[in-house]
Image 1 (cartoon, rainbow, N blue to C red):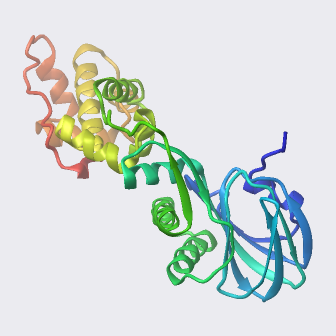
Image 2: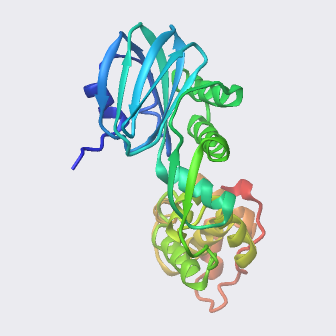
Length: 313
């Protein structure tokens, strides 16, 4: 069986100098590396990501074999090559070049495709394109590369948003999508919704993302978010905060744990965060909630308001 490699293993087959990389930036679904290469003649095992190669410095004659077929072109600054995942390839070029690689995983591509089509996706493949001239494609790749080279505030969120934009553009223009026979008609069914609720309750003490919850429901992120709001009456992040507040209130009233311990057990970043959120829901401090609730079957205070603003996150 042919070995499938990761982007991090690529230099084993294609030696070059790494000029920039997103490896340590915590991005999800999208990755970036910039390489400086001399002329090479290299067979490459299949990658576990879709790969885009943006030519940045130097022009070169390029020969590439994919699916048993050779393609020849001159790749110049501003060109982009596409390579689908799980496809072995052979590349041959003669000149020194700097290139930016952008990688997208199947999870991201599938979620975006499902949200675009509202159908269950069986497989996705990129077209065999050695030389593409596309200003929008170039702009997205360059923005991802710039964030990898000089990360800024909110870098992961920004890079992942660019990854989604890139996936949409590829799916609309450069991809073949194969659907499963049965469309995703179930949506956020009772079973899926309960799985999500159970997951939230079991992981309230951890960082929870909408992407993770969409994966639990086996749905695309936008479809999941829209249907969750329709079924529950609030967006996922508001529901998570409400469940954390309910748990914190219960622990305040029924245990003698410290405020700091309760904050950690309920997924708040620290004691101050818990204080702010509790006050915003009940107009009381956690200590006042504890005093009001102890010895009373009604707890002395109401339940949290489901419509609290998301700024409490």
